[in-house]
Length: 65
Image (cartoon, rainbow, N blue to C red; front, side, top):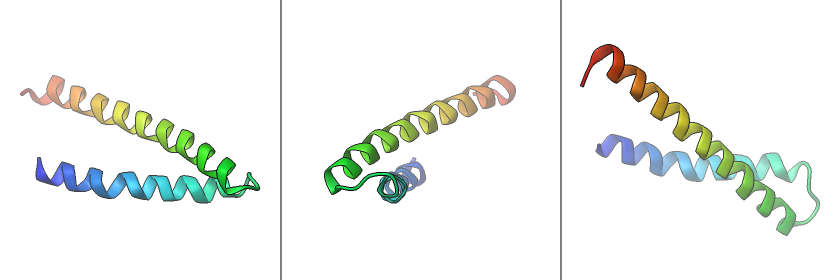
């Protein structure tokens, strides 16, 4: 459990920084860039959560609890 918390603590800021860089290429002002980056990072976090949940369900199904 500690490893998962550590990985999450590292992943979230890194995703936000990557989103800022990606969105900075498309927007002119900092306000627009940060708003777009927050939306993009939020979408990525939701997708990652769904993928991790799916992998855990598959593991429980095939390996068992």
